[in-house]
Image (cartoon, rainbow, N blue to C red):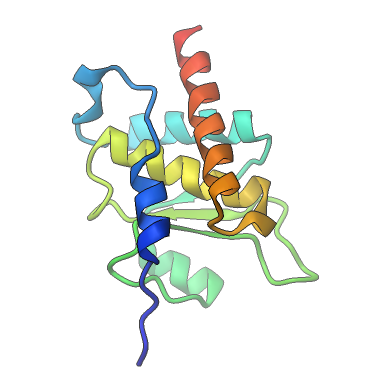
Length: 141
């Protein structure tokens, strides 16, 4: 079976996303209270509500999509022609262990909700960075 791996350019663009968190918070562990609060902030700035899922088996059961162990996150908008009113966003807490990693994953997947046609192009990651910057402004307010 072939397993999809991220393209090196996509991986580099994802890694280059800059979290607005202060340095002393970036390496803090992700807890569910923080993650849910942060996800709401991303949904707000993206103007795209979503359900946050960390139970990857439940996500696979609900979507019918495989969630490979090397995936940090994935979003499901529903099948074409029957889009969900609130997409599902799955976060793999085995790989997303720090708040900085969570910010990158939330921004990346939120970008797919805002501009799905951008794929993993440079302009897609510019949008993801904009979302990160907007979340930073919300958090500072």
